[in-house]
Structure formats: C-alpha cells, structure tokens
Length: 225
Ligand SMILES: [Zn+2]
Image 1 (spheres, rainbow, N blue to C red):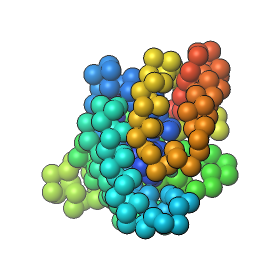
Image 2 (cartoon, rainbow, N blue to C red; image 1 turned 60 degrees about the horizontal axis):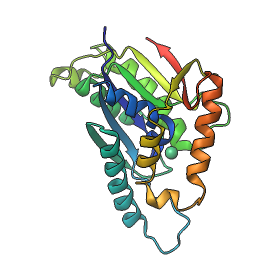
Image 3 (cartoon, rainbow, N blue to C red; image 1 turned 60 degrees about the vertical axis):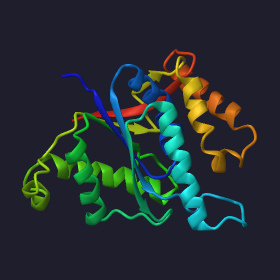
C-alpha cells in the first residue's frame, strides 16, 4: 500500500520543522499529503520579558502557518493547550485519536518519549499520548462515541519518532535542507534567540547524515504497526 497520508503530531510550533522538516518537504514533493497537529500554543517560548504570553501565542501560530506554507503542508490544526503543561490524560488521548480517525494518516510522526532524559514535559506527553491515541484509534470499541458519530476506527501503518536514541530510519534531506531552513526562518520569535541557528541546524543535518552515509539527513525510529 502506498503510504501517502502523513500526520505530524508535535508539541510546539517549530518542532515539526526541527525534527522532520526536510522529510516533510520531500514527502510533499512526492505528492503526499502532510498535515500538522500542534498541541500547545507555545506561549512560554521566549526570553523576552517584554512579550506577553498571549501575544507570543498569536505570533507563534502565525509563524507556524507561514512555515507550513513554505513546506506545502496541507493543514495545521492548533490544539492550543498551554505550553509546558501537557499531561498524558484520557481526554488528550481521545482528542488526538479523533484527529487520527478523521484524517486517517498512514504514517504518524511524533516525539520519541522513550529517549532517555527527554526533559521537556510536553515532548514526553505528546510522544506518549500520540502512541496511546494510535492504539485507541484503531479498534472500534475504543471511544465508541466517536465511532457512533461516524469517526470510524483507523489504523496507521507506521510511526516515525523524531530525535531517537537508536535511529533505524535515515532520510536523505540533501535536496530539501534549503526548504527546511527557509521554513525555520519563519519562526522568527524562536530563531532570534540564537544568531548562528542556520549553522547549528546545518551541522545537525550533517551529523545525522553521516549516520546514513549521506550529506544531510534526518533520523527516526520507525515502528511498523
Ligand atoms: Zn518543542
């Protein structure tokens, strides 16, 4: 089966570009449909004392939409949970499962919650809850209210976890690194914190590329379901 619908479920605006931007650009070039689900509003992501949390949230949503446009992403769903306060709950699980049942992705990309010392609570919560939501979305007796409302069970084929400890999927992004950088540049509120962000991202892509014998790469842990 052709795996041509992809959903990236990430904690914050910019996580998708950072973790899988080159891969997403590649998928879009191949004609695949990529959608983003951004779980928090990113309203704590600044060192600037002059910016209010709600202005920051608004800015980051705007930045994420612009970045998604650069990549050719089909839709961005903002769940607008508060930054830094996500927890693994049944409510959050069913929220994600509903989106999986609605858009029926073949591949889901998310944070790797099993990476040791993954410090950010939102990255852990999103990784765990997305994994739980995949289980809940695939059997019709889970979440019967969704099934009754016409959101039928759906089973994705693969999960690609970003920044894993033990990668087993290496994607060559040599041809799309420029798009990844162009998309990241839209996250102005974030990149302004580090002047040399372009060099850092390029060095990371080079480092990951080495693992797969390619010039620039992104790495994933792939789980086939
Ligand atoms: Zn993040």
